[in-house]
Length: 134
Image 1 (cartoon, rainbow, N blue to C red):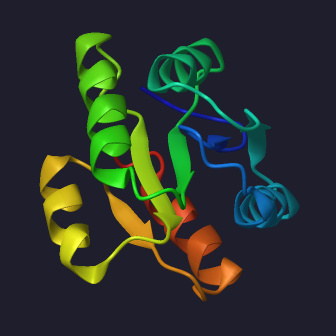
Image 2: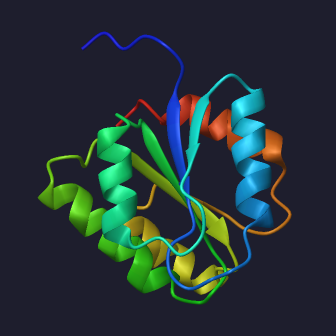
């Protein structure tokens, strides 16, 4: 399939975490790099996030999780994408995620994890290189 137009990324804050500064910084960096960004806002369920990504024909979903619920929330988003035949949407994320949890998350299907302090340019470059690769 020949894909044209800007990369489309849903940036989401799943769960009860109320801190979204990092998500907004990433959303702005992706937008400033020419991508179309749909920011879902706070307190989204995995179902809402997947629905938005499918409705918006997203190439990627970026999840920002600071609440400690990353293992549960990432797994649910990946599961729902598979159930809805949308596993081609690349899932990446960031936040307060312990180093020991990163490899298991990647084994579940999370394409990349960015921890605090990751340069926004690195996130933009990674999304450009991987968003449509799935």
